[in-house]
Image (cartoon, rainbow, N blue to C red; front, top):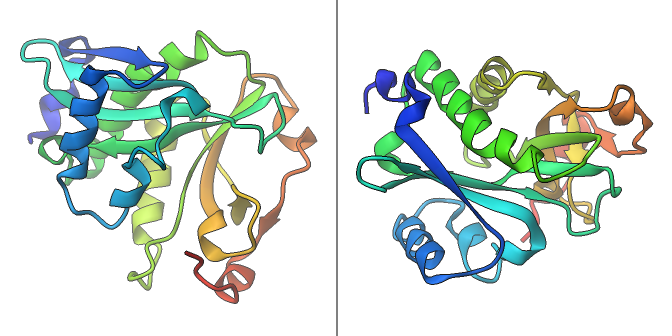
Length: 208
């Protein structure tokens, strides 16, 4: 799709889901029809809507075609004032961008139709967006593009240092690259989070 597809964010609308319903399950099935490397994280057992503060699907206004989706998440593993944004994020193939500006525009779309609406129903002091490394890639080029584009397209987000522990297991998949945003000054530094550097991450096993 042309990178100008996201220029007018008013061409899109969103629905926030709090529990499973037939409309969302149709979107899930469309997502699962792609045999991607992270396919399993979108299954019913791995993507549970009622464990999220809210889970948003963006649709085109004219045809109601699903564009992308993600949620705001804290199932108790983080302090009550910290949440994970763009959790279980998925962008449908038709709408994926191949240019830097296109990716930035995609994050602008996410900010307007996912981040801001979910922030409006939550009261977290800080949030983060995290993704794991692609094991088959030797470089972190994807993360460099993702993080710089996210920080440019989503106001307030900053690049984190090292890898953040996102789940309570000492394996690579539970230590992830991240960007973060504070809504309350000082909240991010106050959180007693766990981080490691790349050399330490490299010494860990992948995990299941």
